[in-house]
Amino acid sequence: MLLEQIYEGAPTVFSGRFRTTINELTDQRPALRPEILAEAVGRLVGLGTFSAATKLVVEEDKGAILAGPVCLATGLPLAVARWYPYDLPPEAGSPASVVEVSSEYYTGTLYLNGVTAGDRVIIIDDTVSTGGTLVALIEAVRRCGAEVLEALVVTEKPANGGVAAVRARSGVEVKPVLRVAIDAASGLVHVLPPDDDAAAGPAAQAAGGPAAQATAGRRLVSATALSGPGPAVPARGHGLAAVGGTELCRLRRVIAPGGAGVYAKCEFRNPTGSHKDRIFHYMIDALERRGEIAPGWTLVECSTGNGGAALAQVGLARGYRVVVLMPAGMTIERITQIRAFGAEIIETDPDGFLLLAEDKAREYVRRHPRSYFLDQSTNPLNWQAWQSAGEEIAAEFRRLGRPVDTFVCSIGTGGTFSGIAAALRAEFPDMVTVAVEVDVSAPLRAKRDGVGFRHRPHNLMGLGPGKIPPNAREELIDEVRTVSGEQAWAMMKRLIAEEKLFTGPTAGANVHVAAQVATERPPGESVVTVLFDSAWKYVSVWDGDYSRRHVTGPEPQRGH
Ligand SMILES: Cc1ncc(COP(=O)(O)O)c(C=O)c1O
Image 1 (spheres, rainbow, N blue to C red):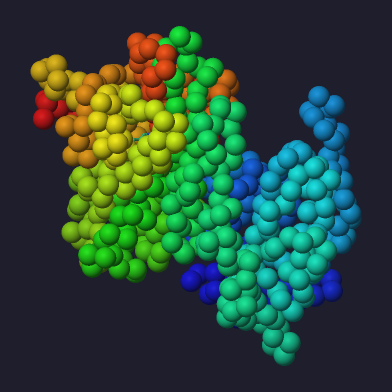
Image 2 (cartoon, rainbow, N blue to C red; image 1 turned 90 degrees about the vertical axis):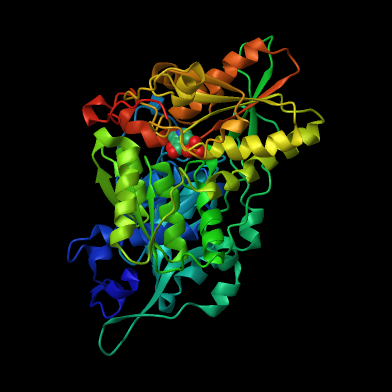
């Protein structure tokens, strides 16, 4: 692993009371390479129980370099503690939380803004040595009325006693990626073998054992949760936060009264911020069982970003290299997240959109031995993975003692639609399904109307790939409706402002159509839909305008 390589044998200097290591992560000597940052961030993300947290906190030191990408990867807001005061106007909110700090590097005052009562915080730092900084940060967070769940650091220097000191003084557990010692004779750093005691203790359990699954409750939302979080799909001991078990929320404010109720499955709350977290553990498990892949191989996937990020995280945790073929022009948030998990992105010509990316993926695996194209668009393991979400929804309605009357879901690969529809249909045979397409790229609509299909560029990334994907199982589709980019983005803004659901534009597409369907059905009936991904993935294109990024689509095609 790269981190072990840069620490093992690294020189040290005196920094006050102790020796401190010199390497590119801690001192940017030589300058920090993206692959080192990506590995450090990926391992921190694999270590934390982010599904239970509402905020990240970091001190404005070297830890901040790590905390930014962790913020992008987890979708959690980041509060930064400063070493100097400045006057914020009273309307900016509560005053900073001020604490004294005495650490290996700095003695003085810390000023923390941005944490509010009720927050559940994970602290990020590069190193724990004596633990002084972490103790001060924990104190600052607690003075805001917030709770500290845990602290994640890249290195622990056990000789300086920081982890034990933080535990004794605050009760907070510190989880390190690496443990290092400094050899007194040479002054060089040595990476210690993993701590067996710690591995069996609370830290290891929280990283992926049963305790993690028990605490993997999802964050509450303002829309009315139909029930509490369901059981999450096990993280299978790969040190990752649990997937699935997302809330089903009843939407109240964006749905006109007098019609059916609309319920939304909050898939955007999965660990990498999208519904795609559901599929890759499932696919890899099945392919490993069949002997088609093994750790050390390269997994290749085409994606507009969500699938790429989900696969990159799982691949990193399970010992695979990941290559994502992605049309140029996707949002910087998605690109950063994929790279933060150490995956390689190969950008393809945006004019060929996903169809070209798929051709390039096939070409890649032909040229690279021990590589495998997962192909979410055609691989049936995709829709099969989605049955778990359908079963979760069915269980909620069984509990309520009534059926799901209509299921509304838009189509990208079709995996989400088909898997959920298949599971719900098995339970509620009279249920009607509505597949949703983008108005300017609607091959199912064109096929049903018996007209030629033409793909045009749009701003609903993840939908409208320019073909009917095999995973959109047509026998499960009753109706096809279309939505425009404008309608979807407008509904996304309403979901954020009115329902307090921080979800993306394709979720807006689903809810726009679900709201329309609800007005046509009687009160007492239930319409179910899906909120795919998180709004933070779109901050850099908040106006929905990708045109300056040259995102277009494939050449017009004629039917199928
Ligand atoms: C943001 C977003 N919404 C919706 C979808 C569609 O999901 P599926 O591929 O399961 O049809 C995707 C797929 O990439 C997506 O990224």
